[in-house]
Length: 113
Image: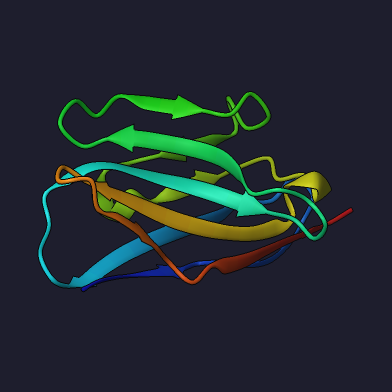
């Protein structure tokens, strides 16, 4: 079984920065992509950023373009220029080449005005 553990969440004032990381452990797998999703209270889970392992191609939600950057190293998500509307639980998702899908337990990000 693959386990994903997120770290780096916390509280910050608007305009500040945080960095999230996602470390995989347990069974080995061949990665197809890594992504970050977020879910605010009362809202649906939404995709924030994706990186494709082979190509390094990235894709972002419009709401975070220019502010967030995802990288290959532990699927690190660098979040700059944070806004109160970025407040949510952030989840790491790994998709394996064989179709396996794995989720982390989540890391809270809170941005105060």
